[in-house]
Amino acid sequence: MWKKERKENFYHGILLGILGTKKSWAVSSNGEAGDGYSDIQIEIIDEEIGIIIEVKYADSGGLDAASQEALEQIEKMHYDENLKDDGIDHILKYGIACYKKRCKVMLADS
Image (cartoon, helix red, strand yellow):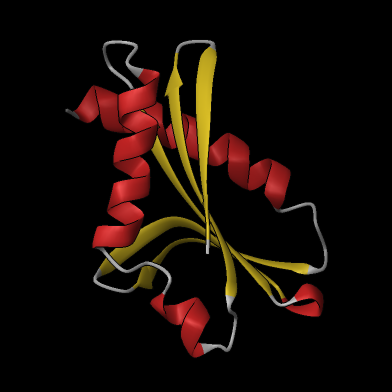
């Protein structure tokens, strides 16, 4: 389990590095959200858009299943509550699965 967590953290870190360059975005990592802690949460204040990203490492290469699991976790744990409380209605939810040099991104828009 520790190895999987470490691999997941690697991809999480890469995403934070990329997303953190957007000066007009409020990017938070592992922040308290809903009934747990979301991997990455972004508020684009000027556009009233919220983004939630959940990252999974697909041990066996099952990218579809892992990215779907990530989306289900966002819903099950109500990670969008904080954004809704801030008055953000348009929320993009991304389930991202990584395996070695491949990744799969699934989007749920609300």
